[in-house]
Image (cartoon, rainbow, N blue to C red; front, top):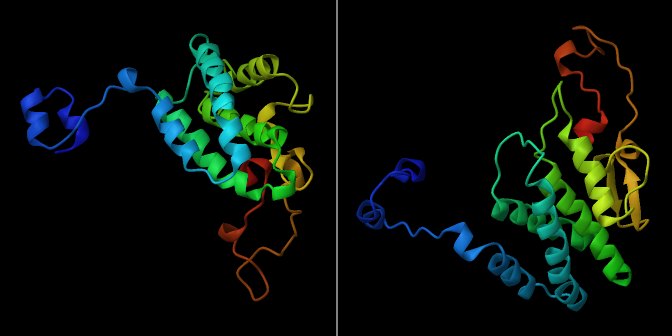
Amino acid sequence: FEINSLKNATPATVSRAGILFINEVDIGWRPFMETWVQQRNNATEKNYLPSLFDRYVETLVEMTRRGYKEVTSIRLINKVSTIIYLLEGLLPSIPEDKMTPESIEMVFAFSAMWAFGGPMNVDKSSDYRKKFSEDFTSAFGSKFPKEGQIFDYFYSAETGEYVHWNTQVPKHVYSPIGNKAGENPFNSIFVETIETVR
């Protein structure tokens, strides 16, 4: 069986397939988050992360409930999972001596921003990412620089502040185009931009 083909199946059919369905509304995202936090080794993370989840997630859910359009609908548990996966990748980059509640919150804000704002639709008629950027800044203060949108920045563990993505774009080195020796075929040329680095 495929999970999506069981959408209209009877409970007997689902139980024979050996699938346990747990309604997202009944359980919510907190048990997943609490289990993950308990497995963290750093005491600062264990103490500070639950309050960040409480403060950010509920506020972002209310903020994006109306007036926003996502490219594709994403469930809340998936957004919380995205925050957790980003934190797992970013928290180890913070040196132990710089692991403070402030640095954890900056990494958390970056993760929450991408989890909730990343799927926002940008098209000719409306830019929901821009609206999200403005609302996120007004809801959580000015952690990000004022120029541009919040999506233009990432947290640098080395400097302890948000840095513009354009600092990570390598300078393009011109190389001759062609099929002769010492030349590059046109289809192998790749020019890095903010979008490809981000």
